[in-house]
Image 1 (tube, rainbow, N blue to C red):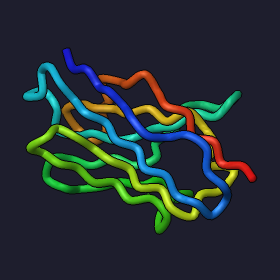
Image 2: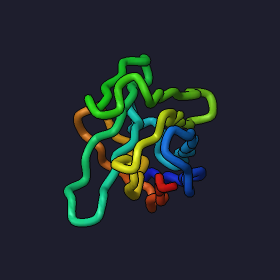
Image 3: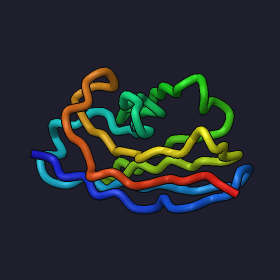
Amino acid sequence: QVQLVESGGGLAQPGGSLRLSCVASGSIFSINAMGWYRQAPGMQRELVAIISWGGSTNYADSVKGRFTISRDNAKNTVSLQMNSLKPEDTAVYYCSAGPSRATPAYWGQGTQVTVSS
């Protein structure tokens, strides 16, 4: 099993920035990718950004150029720097981890991000 603990999130104004972090523990050897998904009220969970241990990334089109995902392999940590935030970025953000970018197998508890003036 893998445990994921998220931090960060909160309230930001449009155009502002927030940073999310997630630390993985447990059966780390089973993980080759970590990332972030989000779910807004009444919507399906969607991919935001994901990164493999080798550094390959995928981003949702809606966040390209505004969000940056990074990882610290030594600390089993993934971070999401969110800039130029928009109200439509408001959602619960979930950290994910899995054997590949396409197969999220573990989830964090979620952290709320609210973008509002």
